[in-house]
Image 1: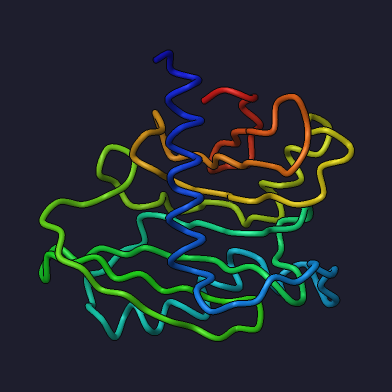
Image 2: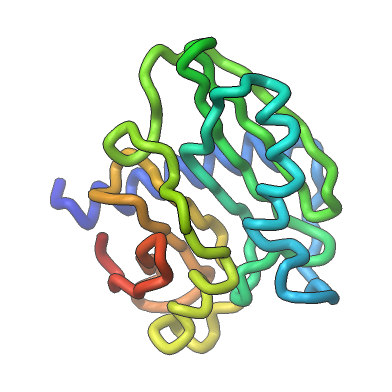
Length: 190
């Protein structure tokens, strides 16, 4: 299996897992555009909701992954669908703590044992990572014009060569796009 096929297979597996974990019990709705400012519904918005829960879980916990399901082309969740999942790891507890933040700000959490840190090269997301709105904007001139929604956006997965976003859009010959953590567009292959 070549590297491009491997990455597509991994993205598909992550998508199916995230859908099962993050959207359980939700009903299928046609996503509607979220009103409000560019912060509302973004990855930073979800991080700010999740951070107190992560800190209460363990003072040394750091965020290693950010995953979005059903994210609009502007990098924000729709008004009525989607979620962000933030995966933190604590060295002192040897556990992963995942906070899922739904489109309406409601949260759910999951904890599981893990002795080694997740993430690209076992590193947490870098300081200075830019918000999903900037990341999605970096893909604007490269993605298919009919792509309106990312079925999956994943940041800092261990399969990537560095801390970058992989975004799978709902349309186009090349639906997968990769963007560095600073907002630099990388292309359609990692």
